[in-house]
Image (cartoon, rainbow, N blue to C red):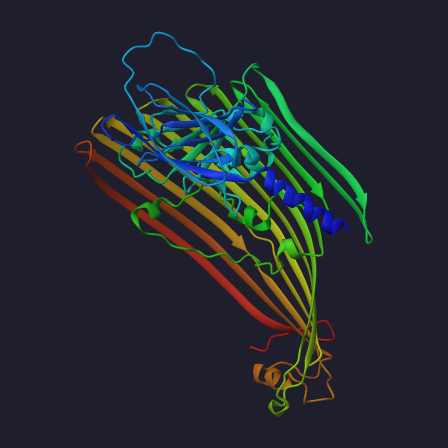
Length: 554
């Protein structure tokens, strides 16, 4: 009965809130398409904004309007008289062409609405209140309301199809520009304006000599009214389940002032809600990019961390602990200091069963029943400190250091009705220290020098252990022939194999660039670079014997 009632309610909702599309073109009196014209639809019944759009390069736009309604269409463009039209919709989509005329005189200005979107050079500014509906909780809810902005499946922000590379709050990096931490945690009520910075360049001196067409950054402007203020929220909850007690605690606190800012985000829960996945932590590079990659050269040292098998979304149990802190401090206009600390601990339990039956008995393959359980633990910590010194436009020096340490373990128990029980254990406790030093010098408007250097020190020690049961008196076990070929001791009660590896990496990557600006469209770039890389690798495979000793079959 409940299912029937739900379907009926959804059907009524569909009739009440059906929508049609209004698509159109905005041109001037000469028939030239107008880009970045604002198109607003005002609901004549509620007197609120129903929909909003911006024209593209072809002057086209699209609005979503309710069926069988009356709306006032307002179209505005700088230097043009605002066009207004009352439009009544039916149940079919509409197509319109609008022509704006030049505004020769301005006798009276009537301000009815704050401009939802404005354009200043390469900066697009959204007014958050113009798009909010009152149901938003986090920054991601605000962003999803904005035309041309969406959050993809990986949690990244996209603006007009381009992934946002950096996110700032009041002009300061938020956790080194990580977008996912910001969208999931900044409260919507604190957001005033969203600035989209197109053609964004980290170094202003190089903006005229590098291709930044795909670089997009966001700057979140917080609400004004207080010079020094705290904001944030705390989520807490507890409950029960058939297996164990459930809990969640998520404090999120932010402090901003003209000179410094402090951010803290915590997460403690066993409900399966993951603030940052293990992949997010691994991919959190702290903004480091090898200098040589810009010139088409690089040496990839590889990654010997654990590749966890369990999809966290399908796990039986998840325990997650997260503590993060971020700060920025500007003791003077020339010096900026910033940094962050991230600690993440997670435990994931999974279980999978299967049964395979072969329909052709002539193959002689027995049916196989399998059961596999896995417990994965991951403890990761990152610390980054950054300094930027820019006494004038001609000189800028940046220094960053990122330290990373982790302790990852994975236990897998697998049972097969054909080969028996197998136990596998993986462990790795690596650490790395990455340093980055950049210096940019502008001799004059035609000559620019840039020096970039990065040093990486990394130590990895993956360990693997596998145990397969064995009957010493039965020489026909499934693994016995293979064991003899490998030189293993087949008289043991189990094949207990281990592998130790040690990988030490030490790499320096540096380059010096000279830019000679020839004209507004051309420049000459000379690059001198060097990569010094040293990597040591050691590995051994051995067998644990029943008496506790180790046997080296090689």
